[in-house]
Length: 204
Image (cartoon, rainbow, N blue to C red; front, side, top):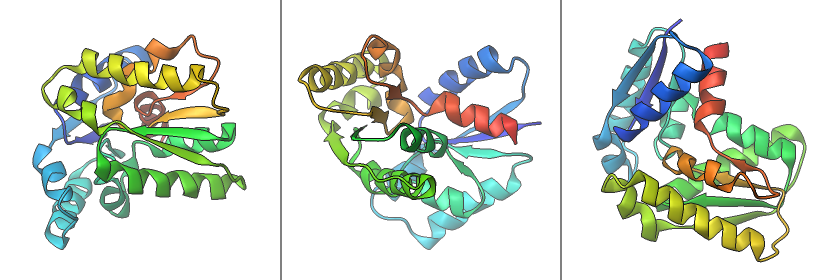
């Protein structure tokens, strides 16, 4: 079965290829990159953009995973899996308080809405602490993925070691996933979306 991935950043292709090779060698992936979708969505979702996303989802043979949080609601409406949905369900299972980090302002509202849906589905309530890190987004845009992951991890480490009571940390964007292995020594689960989402897509 082919899994199609809708990306808005070329850098995500290597992330998911590496994951596929580790957890499902040989599984066919189709990766579509549309950076323009994110650029347009940051100014507000339009019917024309929604139609383009729906057309891409409709053309795919097999499950579709949308890896962009900002356009996630539109992709989900067309039948795609939002990359952060399996992660949000895991966060709801673990419980709060939940620290949610994000580096793009347009990510916050859809991420919070999805987490609240997961909490409601699980029958839980939790305090969600926002952690905006937009000042570091230019690193990712410039292709400095390791530097981006390192500074994100450093900020999270400061908060956790500062003594804040947390059930888990949610890395709201696929771009942040590289910070998770840098925080493996913390006594708080740090959740990233790519592997959870790919496993969900492969299971369909």
